[in-house]
Length: 130
View 1 (cartoon, rainbow, N blue to C red):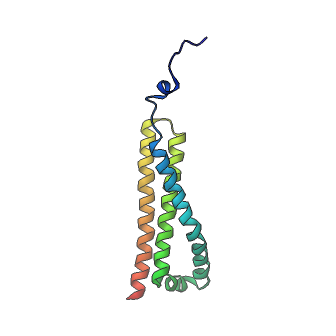
View 2: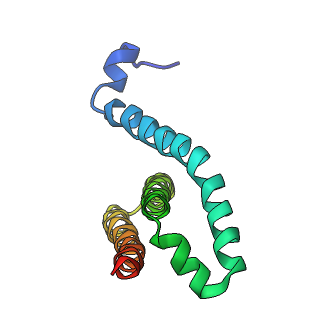
């Protein structure tokens, strides 16, 4: 027989709150909604640009709207990836030090990938206009 006389609220007190989970959930859903519209355009862009080779891809990205949409697509994709990997790390890595290291590495890798790809698109866009 159990001798625990705590109420359910008292037993749950001190175990953490769910205040940040809702924010994370909403951010992931918003980035997913953005990707629903951006990924079909991205697939069209890759197919259209690859038909003409390198010169066609440069010409395609030299158009302002195409460059802007490409940067938005990359940003949304890398942000969505970061949020998903954060969830995986938080759920499946038990050691606190390893978890923090991987979360920091996750952020730096996704920021680095976005910076590299966005700068590449900007370089093509700016050099094509010159």
